[in-house]
Length: 112
Image (cartoon, rainbow, N blue to C red; front, side):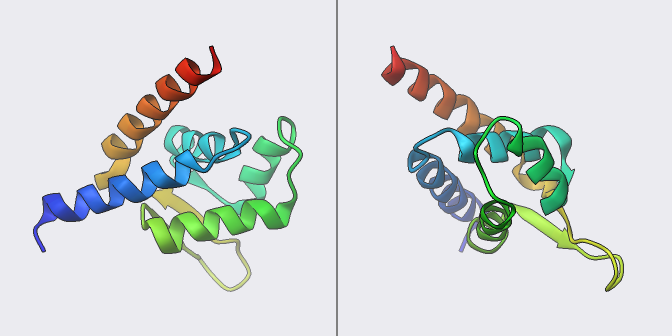
């Protein structure tokens, strides 16, 4: 499989993931990961819980899905005592940015 078709599959997965976003939390998760580059479930929960009615388990589930199904983040655990750090893969930064930009403009148009 060539790299461009692989990237287009990833792009479609991210777009589909965001299309199912009913309350804006998926967009917020992806945007936060894009902005801060590296997160733990705890840090992401702390960032989101002020804005969204969300549980720690829900955030962990979303991050796990983004890692395993979308494949745009890398997971790293320093030792068995530390939390897993999720980092946006450098090769997908531009892809995520463009999908988020497109998603924001589409959601803005439908909200008006």
